[in-house]
Length: 250
Image (cartoon, rainbow, N blue to C red; front, side):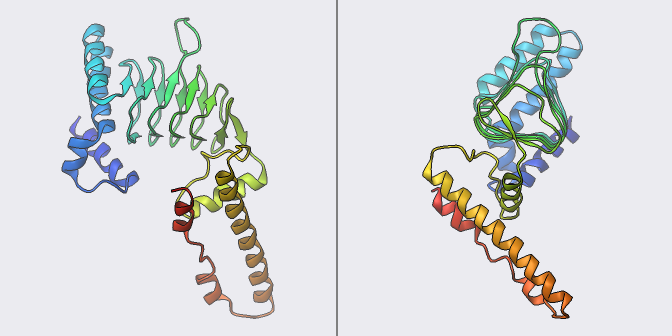
């Protein structure tokens, strides 16, 4: 249990730039507290001490604002950021290295016994407020945008956005996502169909930047074929300032 706790503390430093000290993480991170309580509650559930497991889970919910059913299976190095309002159902399965933000629901769609909650494979990221409903599978590396409602399986590495969620698969969206990740943030939580001019402006900037980068790369390759040394240009080609995008949405 102590080894798992150390692992979960290390994950906070890996994924939250606001974390400053181990003491702060241990005392002030409800996601860490909820996962630690769940480890105990899940063990009690496995020993058929159902009421005691639910009682531990109930106190964990009261203390952290995060409700994890003791029957749920949670893997290693899972990170819950902020966490308030998260609900994880009894038959939910969360794989290793997943990340959940506040307001996420891993819920069921029927009252039937058996598997009725989602399965998250390794490395899945769920944006704030997203609802993942039913015995579906989000395959390894999948991402779900904020406030999306997912009711169907999501393929490996795919991004799902919207209500109901759809897979972002077109080339323009993939270029936008790839460019956004290189600049230190991910645009997967923003739908291109939203009627918000600010969102459209951000998409326009990211698309334009991705287009310019591809054209510059083409020019550099052609120059290199002519024998021109472009190593300096490649080293300094990407001058896009991610802080500028952050200021836009402040």
